Amino acid sequence: MRDSSDPPPAQIELGSTVEAGLLDLGWTPLGHGDSHTQLAPVSRALRSCNRRLQELNGPRNGRSVGATAGYIEEGDRLRVEYGDEPVIARGEASVDGDWLGLTHLVVDPAHRRQGLATRVLAELLDWGATRGATTARLHVETDNRAGMATYEPLGFVTHHTNRYLAAP
Image 1 (tube, rainbow, N blue to C red):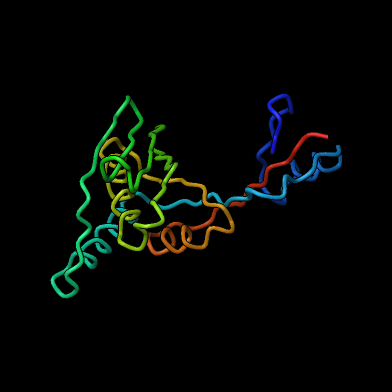
Image 2: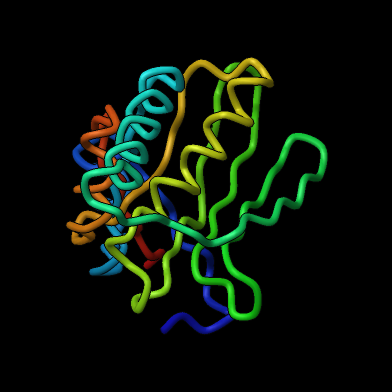
């Protein structure tokens, strides 16, 4: 665990010349937290979310994701939360030009595999699309197989991988 007096780590692109230069200067990998930066066209990801939600809520399987969403919008930022106290799923988005940044997507372990992550993503993608975002960006830790399995069918692909380095 980092002490608050330690210098902040540097987030760099894995395999980059910046990484090589910092390693040469004595910076060291933190050993955890490597993450993929994934990108997807907003329109494709939103269509894929909607198809997935139709499958989950279709007449043949009878399952329904019944939690109610709450929205907290502040300027170019939106937080979506499903469930009252406690919140069982949430996510955040921000718009910067035509980019939609997706962050803090979390589903309570007791409520996973019910389509809540997809529902949160659909809400965030729809909100971003109405504000002109065309490309969605998110980070997913390299060991988060469940997260990658959620994002890949929605059209997200890895653009690059990030690593955190600590100063010497």
